[in-house]
Length: 245
Image (cartoon, rainbow, N blue to C red; front, side, top):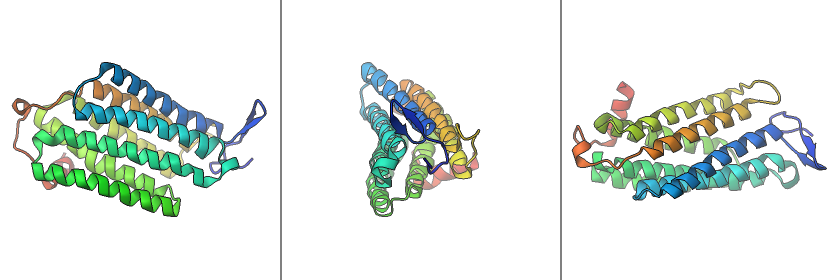
């Protein structure tokens, strides 16, 4: 059976599985996310930042599970439109990660800037969700993720680290930067062969970055006024500082 990625299907106990390795690597991400969620739930750190991070891992775990099963393994039987549940739920996960980053950066940014980011967080989710639902085009999921990670999460954690040397933010910066390799492999279609293609590589990188996000969350401490080394920042000087870096 032909698949969108060209990976051959297999029969398992009389059931046809399309893109088996792509499905498996999607489930790797699910396993990492659910592991992180359970561990963070047991740790039960207080505060909205940690609450949103727990939600992030749970929601992303659900999204990648549905993506693997509905979007890859059985897409041949149920149709491409069933990719939507995984896609849309993953956008909720990115929103939770953005919101956690906004909350974490509140002590070092102006209140008006923080309120703007909170509103923009909701507006961008609704906008990209509607466009994706109408077009059934994964490109808009990529744009939403690039916006959320590259223009919200990364700059905010860079700002917090620059002003407080927060260990958790440092890990977040490295994890998000590493995860950008997934987009590189996905868009360039660089793979290691038919049984470990560009999607498998992208998923593997995502699974590794998810684990390190979890490790970063473990040491993500609430920023206190005494930790701040510089004045509060706006969106413009946050981006400028990141670019100069």
